[in-house]
Image (cartoon, rainbow, N blue to C red; front, side, top):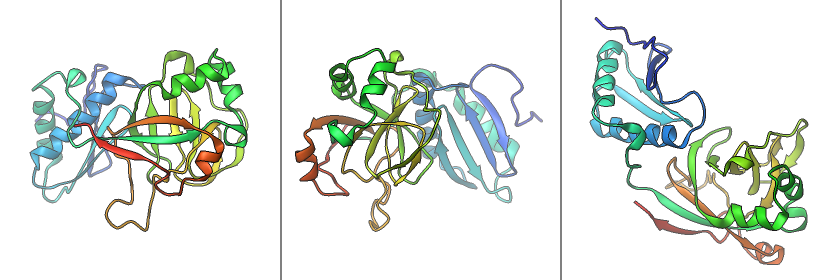
Length: 249
C-alpha cells in the first residue's frame, strides 16, 4: 500500500495533518499560480463529495481536506487525491465559479492613511503613484486568516514586497486598509498590527449578526479599491461601507 505521505521535493505534495487531515501543497511560498491551483483543486475536491469527507479549506498555496477516519481511510483518500491531481495542470486551471468582485471605497487622506507615505517610499513610489497602483486593478482574496472574515489580498507588484514594521501599531480600527509583503488587508476587527495602515474603509468583512453571510469574502473573490475623500468616507455607513458587488464567475 502506498504511503499517504509524499517524500519528493516536487509539488504538489501530500502531507498528513493529525489523524483526520491531509494537506495538498502547491508551493512553499506565495505564488499566483500556486494559489490558483489551491483554489481550483479545493473546488474539484468539493465536487467529488466523497463519503467521510468533512471539510475543505485553502491557505495561500495549499488545500486542506478534513475527513472522518471512522468512515474514510486515510490511504484511500490519499490515493483519490493523487488521481485527481493527475487529471490536469492545476497551476493553469480556471478559478472556481461562484466568485464575486467587491468595489470598496477607501480614503487615503489624513488620519485615515497614517503610514501611506512611508509605505510608498519603501515601494519606491510617490504617494500619488501608490494610490494609483492600489486602485488600478482588482486583487484576489488569496486566503482568509488571522481573524474571522479577514482576507489576504494580492499579489501587488514586486516593488510592494515591503517588510512588516519592526514595532507594533497598538491599534487599527475595523475597516483599516494595511499593506505588507505584496498584500493588502482590510482589517475585519480592531487590533494591534505590524502592517502599515495606508487607508480607511467602512467595510466590515465579518458580520456576526448576519445569519446568511457572516463572512463576506471567500477565497477567490476579487476586491477593487476606489478612492474617496475623507468627507465622502465619513458619509458611508458600516458594515456595507458603500461597497458594490458583481458576480464575476
